Every structure is written in structure tokens, then in C-alpha cells.
Length: 140
Image (cartoon, rainbow, N blue to C red):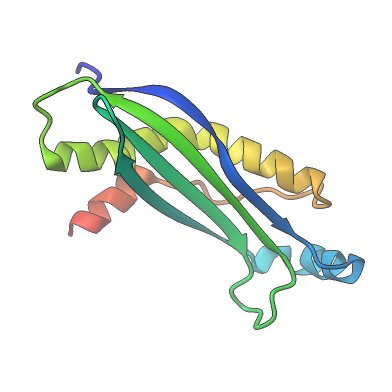
């Protein structure tokens, strides 16, 4: 199968690490198993068959009314569409599945490194995100 897109550039567009106090950091460390990863993907067309895809990872504790810590990375990837006759559903799959599967290992490593250097040295993300499965579930 031929490639229908190529990555032109990818970079961290925005980053938020919020640890309000030393006490909050201790609480975060003690409650880290409760933290969940949320993924949001958006895109906007750019010039010359290019699309900016924004993948946002938010790592927070959904069980806390008052946020003790908040961590978010917004990762921009600009892709060039190589197939000029691409159908809308193919483009959607590229943005939501194929591209995410390709960039996610690097994005996850960058985010994890930032969190570890922010005072969470033993942090690991246990669940890997299966973008193929999420995409198929979205279609049903």
C-alpha cells in the first residue's frame, strides 16, 4: 500500500504542568494510580494540501473535585496529503488512526519524560492506546 501522507513537521505546541505546592506533589504521587489519560484529536487544513493535526494528551485525576495536579501536552503534526483524490473517510482514518499510531510512541515518550522531570520519577503509563480499535469503535 502506498503512503497517502507524509509528516512535514511535528513539535510540542503547548505544555502545561501544574503542581501547586509541595503538598500537592506528595498527594499526586500517592494518588497517581487514579490518574487517567485523555486523548483529543483535532485538525485544520493548511495551505498546499497540508493539514495541521493537534493531538492533546491530558493526564489528570477524575476522582478529585479540587485538582491537585494537571498535566497536558498539545502536540502538533503537519502532514502533506500525497493522494490528491483522497476520499473524506480515508482522510479521517489517516488523521484519527494512521497518523496517531505513527506519532504516539514518540509523543508518549516526550510526555512521560517531562512528567518524570517534573517530580514524578517512577511514573509509567500502563495502558497503551490502540488508535485502530478506537477508530473502529467510533465508526459503529
